[in-house]
Length: 133
Ligand code: NI
Image (cartoon, rainbow, N blue to C red):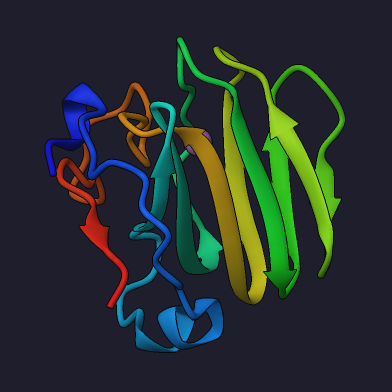
């Protein structure tokens, strides 16, 4: 699938076992594609520790914590701390630094072409997202 264009497999009624998909993720801070619809994507990520500060100039990004403890640290507003069952939306263009205080299972909902490191190019940048196992 061509992630940078947002061209992803058309919607089809497949079942994704979300718990099993999380169990199969062997790399932290590297989102996997669980579903794509209408140019948006549901991505799953396992994270722990600090990620780099970045922004997504043209995309709002939804963070939904299924398990764990995540802070989104901001330069220009109060931090947001999410526990299991809590979500928030980071508006496009807002610099954010995710910090997971323990191993955290995270669902992201955002335009399919959104990169994990946003406007930053680093070793952690995922250009081509993999589908969940
Ligand atoms: Ni982000």
